[in-house]
Length: 212
Image (tube, rainbow, N blue to C red; front, side, top):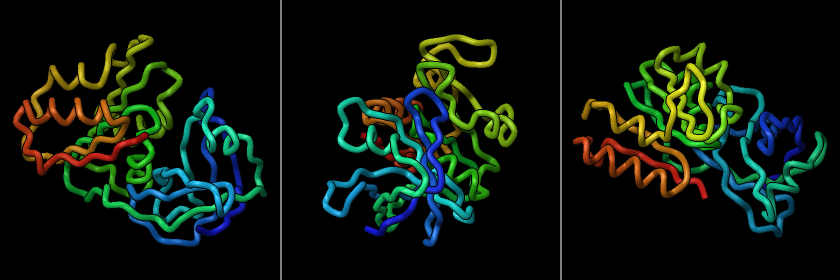
């Protein structure tokens, strides 16, 4: 674990923050790092939420009430330090056509992939409960246009699908030749994976990253 000084801490939605620090390491888009506030603290795992050529590393997280790390992490100011591990993990994509499926802050690894030049030939499906949780939506709209699908289960608007990600997927016929990348909480990942398999998607074409 190495100490890094924060360069920014921005609340992008109620209870949701992006922290930043200078990048001095290489990583593959989709990889994770462990973060702690001191060398002796048990670290937590977070996906990198920035491009692999960006000057800074960004981490997206939501505050968990009663949590040991996120409330304190959200209160940090630029200049204060966090301890970060080397990047690791194999949740990575190529330039081949693929569907990216995320809920909540599970959008982070896909934003890293997009910032790293991997958004061509991709369809992104992002599921949230409230309309203010579509993180980076302006950039997604510009990059993906009609291939950016927003699913909102708690509110409605003219340009979102009214329901969960699984509700949206049930009505579609997916090509078995395309890869599917899923990131979110365990229950969502399992539900989407099972749904895709029922629709004839080969198990080897499905890749997942579980957020705890």
